Image (cartoon, rainbow, N blue to C red; front, side, top):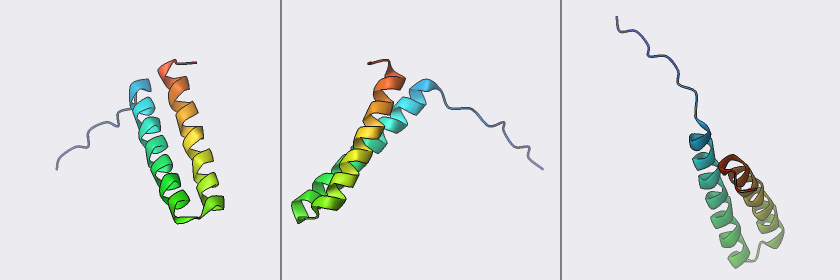
Length: 63
């Protein structure tokens, strides 16, 4: 029976990359919603994109 490899904790660099990806996904979604005319939903997605962008900047030391 094969043993499980130990879980590896994500590094700060990994967390920053994840935050950058999430920010990009939320921004793309917001832009698409905005183009369709769903302004309220788009604003919500823009706020979420900004949250993840702020998190990325903090993790990357860009404050």
